[in-house]
Length: 498
Ligand SMILES: NC(=O)c1ccc[n+]([C@@H]2O[C@H](COP(=O)([O-])OP(=O)(O)OC[C@H]3O[C@@H](n4cnc5c(N)ncnc54)[C@H](O)[C@@H]3O)[C@@H](O)[C@H]2O)c1
Ligand SMILES: O=C(O)C[C@H](O)C(=O)O
Ligand SMILES: [Mg+2]
Image 1 (tube, rainbow, N blue to C red):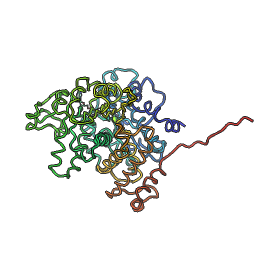
Image 2 (cartoon, rainbow, N blue to C red; image 1 turned 45 degrees about the vertical axis):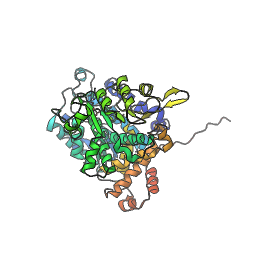
Image 3 (cartoon, rainbow, N blue to C red; image 1 turned 90 degrees about the vertical axis):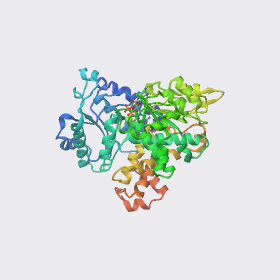
Image 4 (cartoon, rainbow, N blue to C red; image 1 turned 60 degrees about the vertical axis):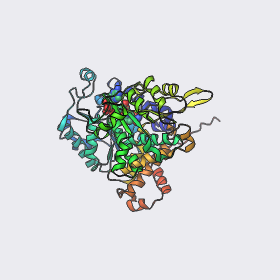
């Protein structure tokens, strides 16, 4: 009944089970606690996880969303309170992807917290010690992965809201051996690429013009670097996929973090950001220096896009938006993607009032459209990984792919981009409304299945073996996905008064 209500009213309820309200829930979780949900694996469970997984009552689990609570939305380290995010994401797996709700498992890895308030809070439900670090931390995650894949070899594990340093490291560690992905790094990247391709089409230009876009990214964490990595690979593919193409794609991005513009001259540069550090040779003629402020960078670069994944509310100030007036694009794009609402780099009202009706606007959390007067509407898109992660999970499940490849993620992003019609995109609508999330998820999942088959990764699912999967046409693949989506059905009961 809960899922029936959620699915039928997804537009109204997504902002409650998901961003922004889920953020508030996580911030107050110990005080709101009613009953335990999900599984907790803690530092104290070392050596026991293999037997613990057998305590979970379901014989089959299709999807796990796991977090260690270290970076929940843009709210920082919330320790075990972060379980709310895993529960919320899995609600969307049921509502959008039709994963059976009896086969989802939210997981919290409790290795302590560095949140001083929680460390002192008598109501805190988790371990009251500082976070475990280094190889001991990795050993805990290794043990958890071995345990869940031993009990459910076909499960898919989505890593969610791990602080950046672990997000990248764990993704590299597991992605070639387990059916797993990191939603903040990879899901966000695909959604951003789909929106950026939409912004190119909205200028009346072909998607192949994407490599000409100049993009300033504020934020060099798991999400920001994930976007720049994948978007530059997409550009490079469009340019011929050779070394020159990669170099040209790289030069389209300017990354600004808490210390300003990232250049080669930065000391202690984060290895994940290093490939995108601006070269010394480029800085002179651009009039930019190491650590240049966001506003300076926007003024000098005149970018087509400013994209925020900084978790700093209001970072796209009036001055930054004013500077974007000189953008070389006929329709500059403002993507204020940080969550929850108060962390958005700017609101659509702020962006449209400074830059006018032409811009393309997207935010991570939902905002209302803006009335621009004279019957004109400034469209507020929700650029959130919710448009991809359910389809990535479902497509992986139904293909029986052994791993989740870059190609499968790329296919998902491209399907999301092509889902929007030209008329919609020209009106500034680059993402579908959430009311269509079940349909878009079905399409994304089908694209993931097709790509898994093409890459010879698919091993089939239940009665559908790999050979049969390979024989399905595009349309048949979509039907196959649809038939395997769980749906709560209730008969209509009409009470008749005689
Ligand atoms: N819309 C989506 O689908 C989506 C997906 C993933 C993450 N996010 C959001 O993105 C945000 C960042 O997530 P993350 O995992 O990358 O976090 P993170 O903490 O790893 O990274 C934050 C980055 O922002 C930088 N930063 C801080 N202050 C800045 C400033 N004043 N100017 C420029 N950069 C600044 C930091 O240096 C860091 O590089 C969060 O709010 C999260 O909710 C949104
Ligand atoms: O949870 C969301 O709404 C998106 C994203 O995964 C985030 O961490 O902000
Ligand atoms: Mg997240």
